[in-house]
Amino acid sequence: MRRFRHVAEYLVFRTLVCIVQAFSPVACARAADWLAYLMCQVLPRKLTRYEVARANLRAAFGDRYSDLQIDAIIRRMWGHLFRLVGEMIHMPRKLRLENIVEAVAFRAKADVLRALCSGRPVLLLSGHFGNWEMAVSVFGLFGFRMGLVARELDNPFLNRWFLRFRRYTGHRQISKKGGFDTLTALLERRGNVAILADQDAGSNGVFVDFFGRAASTHKSIALLALQYDALICVGCARRLNEMLANGWPRYELGCEAVIDPRDFAAGDAVRDITQEYTHALERAIRRAPEQYFWVHRRWKSVPRTGKRREEASTKRAG
Image (cartoon, rainbow, N blue to C red):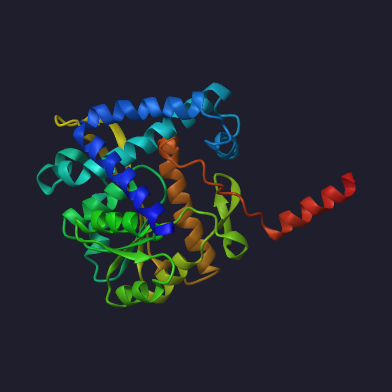
């Protein structure tokens, strides 16, 4: 029964891929805007996690945006995510080494190149912001192969499709679960690893400031950087309001920070490094908040002191 469901899901997905490939990127962008309208104006808000996105935006920006502006950001966020799916499907055909200079505007390129040519392992760090799949593809097109840390999909047919997609520029996927030995072996060989690092880490994470609030963040990146003397490059691919002649959107591939663990010998190095790259991700998100995945509960975990405070308030109220 499970295999039948997996085959059915894969057939639906491949049908969607064929439909998207039959349309131009411009038509796909228009369809993405229509789907975003459907998500925000037609479907029940519980299904679209509207309240989670709204609460996250309020937590991040306070009263900076009105309710109407918050709604507009959420709608544009969904439009961005649907466009991202279409761009992933079109990417092997539309994004090539021959047109990469036209398709991508580079910011702080020299800093990244120095890190990649330093002879030390590099952790390329980003979050669920912009087009993270395109960002690593660009490095692959320029010959900088790396391991991509990602969760394996439950559907094996879909998982193989995404494996092939990520390999078309020479990258190798490393399973988020069970791939630790592969990851460390790559760092030992002074290889490069790409990781998304903006998800809640639960009670075992280190709490650092993210948009003015304590956010549980994974310690593993800082620990790996310290253990393997790896540089951390924090960057993102932000969609610009420009388009190429073939309808492909133009992106800015920017580096927000290059973090050297050797600079954090004193104090709490793990916390300080984690805070440094978290602030770098925040700076990138502030440039285009509609391109961030706000439906993830980034502040779900609460520091223990905060939990005790909440429990005491509840007892007093009772």
